[in-house]
Figure 1 (cartoon, rainbow, N blue to C red):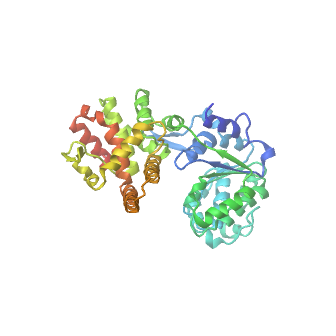
Figure 2: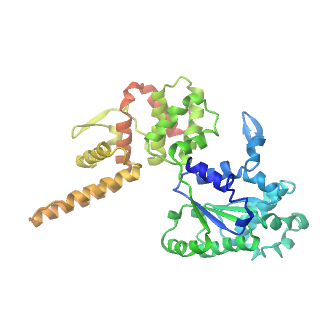
Figure 3: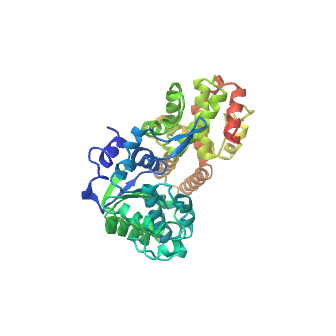
Length: 435
């Protein structure tokens, strides 16, 4: 059973943590590396909020009735309990976050009967002007809102959270610096305890730096009841996102295998690939697997480094290497670094799991080589140290170019099978964004 399936079972199906009343008042943290698809997993696999989307030029339900009924929104709504998702992106105060929670709890049960859904984004940006709000019923806030929405209806928002509602907080790394992390966790804990609701925090703990990192270490043990790890494989993440697009299944394997080649686990990049591929294949349905692979690898590289390699340009011979003139920066990189890079990949192909790991491994091994030099002559030893420092600086300066060179120069050796015309078309599409 995959990591995704285990989490689904635990949160919603067999164990149903989020539906068990014994867990009311608890806070859990769903953590994973940046880009692994945590938000996508919550919205598309767990919550399944009812909404409309455009499909083939028509507005349709995002989920079938069967799919929606399997989600958390449907299961809680049967009990008149809210399932609220709150992004901290752009929030500048605890009050704005608090108001967003209430607004969405109301909208979740009542729907668009009033203008709450349209006004919500405005309210959350002016939360500083509202003052502190009493949790249960929001107290004086009604005076400010009574000309916008029926007070009696709005008072129900808090009740939809009590004894079993679920609140999910996301995008911690995008909150304003004006919000103190200690205050934020205190507010979240207070919500869970006062309302006896369940709180889910989607988080990559690595986002915290300096003072916030220390605060997080201090408060997480007090605030979090359960830690869950979201750690999908590339294939699992691919399947989750691929299913959302209307791409012919015959392209599935070449897209998946190309993504796996680049050691990338990033939901946003996968979405970018599928969205662009839909446009590309519609205009060029005759593309071969090699041409599709060229497109995927080149697009991933562009997402990571903002470099488009135009291999069809003329080449220059540098220290025995035929290098595209577009890649002339390699002239400034000592050839031993390129050789060392290729040696790392050749000797440890299965151990190198990411582009950053490749560069880190290269730096570590160069440093180890220096440490193993046994040379009584201090001048020679000093020269070796200076050379190492220069090499490490070069790696930092040209890390994007080195990684791209390794990935594309090696993986795209087959490009001779693709016409220069097709290469130009694909590169222009990646670089300019249109066909």
